[in-house]
Amino acid sequence: MCANILITGASGYIGGSIVTEIWSRKSEFAKAVQIHAAVRSQEQAESFSERDIRIAQLDLGDKSAVVNYVLSNDSPSTLPINVSDLFDLVINNATSIDPNVALNLIVALKEQREATGKESYYVHTTGLSAFDENTNWPFGEVKDTDPVYDLERKSADTYIVRQVDTFVVQQLKAAGVTGFLIFPPTIHGRGSGTWNQLSPRIPALVKASIKYEQVYRFAENRIATLAHISDVAGFYAQLLEAILRGEQLPTGEDGYYFLVSHVVPWWEILDRLAARLHSRGLVTSASTKTWPSDEMAAESVGVPVKFAYSMWNSSPKVLCEKKDLVGWKPIWNKESFLERLDDEIDDFLELGMPKSSLLDSLKPKPGN
Image (cartoon, rainbow, N blue to C red; front, side, top):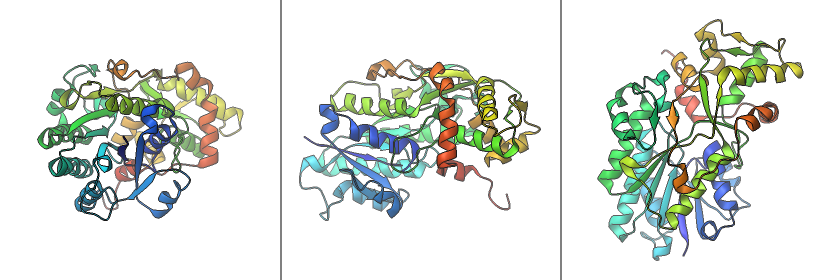
């Protein structure tokens, strides 16, 4: 039996790496998966031409387009003829701040069930910034086994990601769709997707350092929560396999999963970055300095001050206790990350600053 999986944000850093991870796996479950990759442009679609992957060139903000695709499985008929053509799972990596995209996907799965009786799953990619003091998280350290939904609901009005998280849980319950919320940390490493292969986090620091010929840091040395993109993509593949095996996993209000494989003080990262850039002659000093102003820091990465802190000096205090439920054993650790920081520089110099729909949405608008 073939399982149909719709992966949104398939041309993005996380989504593209998830597509590759599932597509390249040799397990009996992964072999039985038909991936549908949702992309925005024809050029992005063509990047998958050498893979046995169906392309969904969709405007995810268009409810009718999303519903029609899910109900027809890219077929000209109104409904799939065979049960095997129905969607088993949607993994949404497109956005963590647009509730309408999530709602359209959830509604599509609801209508599929109502039309066919087919039960399905929705996986929502969000982010650990929801639990950071920089985003006004008031409850301190939190475990993914805690009543996280209730805590997010109490503080939803102070941060858009928490608003969307709680909205998603509520809509899943109303629609009768089984769902999971996945919270990656600051991700590093080169992705394995066919389009966007870099996160904006480390590359933005490299770009700013080269521009000013100096590595700057924020005044407060906070602790970064990290994971390599290959480990993150591996979690999603293992979650998929657990779902297809029929394992009983926490879902809905209890379906929060935190992903952290190692933690490193931001100053330690930046000190190492300064040394490596200086050895290449890309900065004038092997030592770091404090940003002269918050405004300069924000301008260098192209976002408002409050988002510069939440993205480049984040420190969510979280404990990941559910990773064993899907057998997640990340390979990368603090030592391997720091030892291979040169790879991050090489990737930026080769590929440049990646496009990021999230960063684009956070940039100040003209006149604001």
